[in-house]
Image 1: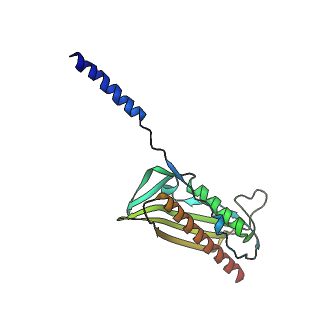
Image 2: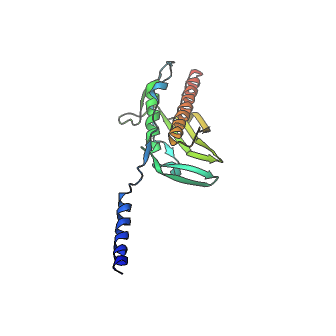
Image 3: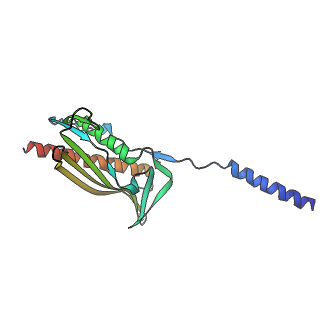
Length: 202
Protein backbone atom coordinates (compact mmCIF):
# COMPACT_ATOMS: atom_id res chain seq x y z
CA UNK A 1 0.00 0.00 0.00
CA UNK A 2 2.81 2.36 0.91
CA UNK A 3 4.66 1.48 -2.31
CA UNK A 4 1.60 2.24 -4.42
CA UNK A 5 1.15 5.54 -2.62
CA UNK A 6 4.79 6.51 -3.20
CA UNK A 7 4.59 5.58 -6.89
CA UNK A 8 1.45 7.68 -7.26
CA UNK A 9 3.42 10.66 -5.92
CA UNK A 10 6.66 10.05 -7.81
CA UNK A 11 5.29 9.37 -11.32
CA UNK A 12 3.46 12.74 -11.73
CA UNK A 13 6.56 14.57 -10.46
CA UNK A 14 8.74 12.69 -12.95
CA UNK A 15 6.38 13.42 -15.83
CA UNK A 16 6.18 17.09 -14.85
CA UNK A 17 9.98 17.31 -14.87
CA UNK A 18 10.13 15.67 -18.29
CA UNK A 19 7.59 18.14 -19.68
CA UNK A 20 9.54 21.09 -18.31
CA UNK A 21 12.81 19.85 -19.78
CA UNK A 22 11.43 19.65 -23.35
CA UNK A 23 12.30 22.83 -25.25
CA UNK A 24 9.81 24.59 -27.54
CA UNK A 25 10.65 24.60 -31.25
CA UNK A 26 12.38 27.85 -32.17
CA UNK A 27 10.87 29.59 -35.23
CA UNK A 28 12.91 30.10 -38.40
CA UNK A 29 12.72 33.51 -40.08
CA UNK A 30 13.06 34.34 -43.78
CA UNK A 31 13.88 37.60 -45.55
CA UNK A 32 12.98 39.22 -48.87
CA UNK A 33 15.64 41.72 -49.93
CA UNK A 34 17.01 43.38 -53.03
CA UNK A 35 19.86 41.29 -54.49
CA UNK A 36 22.70 43.79 -54.93
CA UNK A 37 24.63 41.24 -57.01
CA UNK A 38 21.94 41.49 -59.70
CA UNK A 39 22.19 45.21 -60.42
CA UNK A 40 21.87 45.50 -64.22
CA UNK A 41 25.08 46.29 -66.11
CA UNK A 42 23.37 48.60 -68.59
CA UNK A 43 23.25 52.25 -67.56
CA UNK A 44 20.08 53.83 -68.98
CA UNK A 45 19.65 57.55 -69.35
CA UNK A 46 18.23 59.07 -66.19
CA UNK A 47 14.76 60.53 -66.68
CA UNK A 48 14.48 64.12 -65.38
CA UNK A 49 11.63 63.27 -63.01
CA UNK A 50 11.08 62.33 -59.38
CA UNK A 51 9.48 59.04 -58.36
CA UNK A 52 7.68 58.29 -55.10
CA UNK A 53 7.56 54.64 -54.06
CA UNK A 54 4.26 54.10 -52.24
CA UNK A 55 3.64 51.33 -49.71
CA UNK A 56 2.73 48.02 -51.27
CA UNK A 57 -0.93 47.02 -51.14
CA UNK A 58 -0.77 43.36 -50.08
CA UNK A 59 -3.82 41.11 -49.79
CA UNK A 60 -4.64 40.77 -46.05
CA UNK A 61 -4.36 36.95 -46.14
CA UNK A 62 -0.63 37.32 -46.91
CA UNK A 63 0.10 40.53 -45.01
CA UNK A 64 1.28 39.02 -41.72
CA UNK A 65 4.54 37.50 -40.55
CA UNK A 66 3.04 34.07 -41.21
CA UNK A 67 3.86 32.25 -44.45
CA UNK A 68 0.81 30.89 -46.24
CA UNK A 69 0.46 27.54 -47.98
CA UNK A 70 -2.46 26.84 -50.33
CA UNK A 71 -3.58 23.23 -50.29
CA UNK A 72 -6.87 23.67 -52.17
CA UNK A 73 -8.48 26.30 -54.37
CA UNK A 74 -10.08 28.22 -51.51
CA UNK A 75 -8.10 26.86 -48.58
CA UNK A 76 -4.89 28.15 -47.05
CA UNK A 77 -3.12 27.52 -43.77
CA UNK A 78 0.01 28.95 -42.19
CA UNK A 79 3.31 27.39 -41.20
CA UNK A 80 3.67 27.19 -37.42
CA UNK A 81 7.42 27.60 -36.99
CA UNK A 82 8.41 29.43 -40.19
CA UNK A 83 7.80 33.18 -40.54
CA UNK A 84 8.84 36.25 -42.47
CA UNK A 85 11.42 38.25 -40.50
CA UNK A 86 9.71 41.44 -41.73
CA UNK A 87 6.18 41.68 -43.04
CA UNK A 88 6.32 41.32 -46.86
CA UNK A 89 4.75 44.68 -47.71
CA UNK A 90 7.49 46.42 -45.72
CA UNK A 91 10.41 44.40 -47.07
CA UNK A 92 9.18 44.55 -50.69
CA UNK A 93 8.51 48.30 -50.53
CA UNK A 94 12.12 48.72 -49.46
CA UNK A 95 13.14 46.26 -52.20
CA UNK A 96 11.50 48.46 -54.88
CA UNK A 97 13.11 51.59 -53.46
CA UNK A 98 16.55 49.93 -53.45
CA UNK A 99 16.05 48.77 -57.03
CA UNK A 100 15.19 52.18 -58.44
CA UNK A 101 17.87 53.94 -56.43
CA UNK A 102 20.44 51.53 -57.86
CA UNK A 103 19.36 51.56 -61.52
CA UNK A 104 18.86 55.36 -61.41
CA UNK A 105 16.07 55.52 -64.02
CA UNK A 106 14.62 58.59 -62.30
CA UNK A 107 16.49 61.70 -61.20
CA UNK A 108 15.27 61.25 -57.64
CA UNK A 109 13.57 58.28 -55.98
CA UNK A 110 12.23 58.08 -52.44
CA UNK A 111 9.43 56.62 -50.34
CA UNK A 112 8.38 60.06 -49.08
CA UNK A 113 8.54 63.60 -50.47
CA UNK A 114 8.00 66.14 -47.73
CA UNK A 115 8.57 69.53 -49.36
CA UNK A 116 7.72 68.88 -52.99
CA UNK A 117 5.25 66.83 -54.96
CA UNK A 118 6.80 63.98 -56.94
CA UNK A 119 6.28 63.85 -60.70
CA UNK A 120 5.30 60.17 -60.62
CA UNK A 121 4.20 57.53 -58.14
CA UNK A 122 4.82 53.81 -58.25
CA UNK A 123 1.87 51.74 -57.00
CA UNK A 124 2.23 48.01 -56.34
CA UNK A 125 -0.47 45.49 -55.48
CA UNK A 126 0.31 41.90 -54.52
CA UNK A 127 -2.66 39.55 -54.77
CA UNK A 128 -0.93 36.29 -53.86
CA UNK A 129 2.35 35.50 -52.11
CA UNK A 130 2.23 31.85 -51.08
CA UNK A 131 3.41 28.29 -51.29
CA UNK A 132 1.17 26.07 -53.42
CA UNK A 133 0.97 22.34 -52.68
CA UNK A 134 0.18 20.44 -55.87
CA UNK A 135 0.25 16.71 -55.17
CA UNK A 136 3.83 15.99 -54.12
CA UNK A 137 5.11 19.22 -55.64
CA UNK A 138 5.54 22.60 -53.95
CA UNK A 139 5.53 25.85 -55.90
CA UNK A 140 6.23 29.49 -55.10
CA UNK A 141 3.36 31.72 -56.28
CA UNK A 142 3.57 35.46 -56.86
CA UNK A 143 0.74 37.51 -58.37
CA UNK A 144 1.73 41.18 -58.67
CA UNK A 145 0.47 44.33 -60.38
CA UNK A 146 2.76 47.39 -60.77
CA UNK A 147 1.71 50.81 -62.04
CA UNK A 148 3.56 54.03 -62.81
CA UNK A 149 1.12 56.88 -62.24
CA UNK A 150 1.51 60.56 -63.09
CA UNK A 151 0.92 62.40 -59.82
CA UNK A 152 -1.05 65.22 -61.42
CA UNK A 153 -4.27 63.72 -62.70
CA UNK A 154 -3.46 60.19 -61.46
CA UNK A 155 -2.98 58.96 -65.03
CA UNK A 156 -1.55 55.44 -65.36
CA UNK A 157 1.44 55.74 -67.70
CA UNK A 158 2.90 52.22 -67.52
CA UNK A 159 1.37 49.05 -66.11
CA UNK A 160 2.66 45.51 -65.71
CA UNK A 161 0.93 42.44 -64.26
CA UNK A 162 2.36 38.99 -63.65
CA UNK A 163 0.95 35.81 -62.14
CA UNK A 164 3.89 33.42 -61.82
CA UNK A 165 4.69 30.12 -60.16
CA UNK A 166 8.06 28.41 -59.76
CA UNK A 167 8.58 24.75 -58.88
CA UNK A 168 10.67 24.17 -55.76
CA UNK A 169 13.23 21.36 -55.82
CA UNK A 170 12.02 20.22 -52.42
CA UNK A 171 9.84 21.39 -49.54
CA UNK A 172 12.22 24.03 -48.25
CA UNK A 173 11.02 27.50 -47.29
CA UNK A 174 14.47 28.96 -47.89
CA UNK A 175 14.05 27.91 -51.54
CA UNK A 176 10.57 29.45 -51.48
CA UNK A 177 11.87 32.81 -50.21
CA UNK A 178 14.63 32.70 -52.84
CA UNK A 179 12.12 31.97 -55.62
CA UNK A 180 9.88 34.88 -54.55
CA UNK A 181 12.95 37.13 -54.39
CA UNK A 182 13.99 36.13 -57.94
CA UNK A 183 10.51 36.41 -59.46
CA UNK A 184 9.94 39.82 -57.89
CA UNK A 185 13.26 41.07 -59.27
CA UNK A 186 12.46 39.75 -62.77
CA UNK A 187 9.04 41.43 -62.89
CA UNK A 188 10.37 44.68 -61.46
CA UNK A 189 13.19 44.73 -64.01
CA UNK A 190 10.76 44.01 -66.85
CA UNK A 191 8.55 46.86 -65.61
CA UNK A 192 11.54 49.23 -65.53
CA UNK A 193 12.35 48.37 -69.14
CA UNK A 194 8.72 49.13 -70.08
CA UNK A 195 9.11 52.56 -68.45
CA UNK A 196 12.22 53.31 -70.50
CA UNK A 197 10.53 52.13 -73.70
CA UNK A 198 7.47 54.30 -73.01
CA UNK A 199 9.51 57.44 -72.40
CA UNK A 200 11.89 56.82 -75.31
CA UNK A 201 8.86 56.61 -77.64
CA UNK A 202 7.69 60.13 -76.69
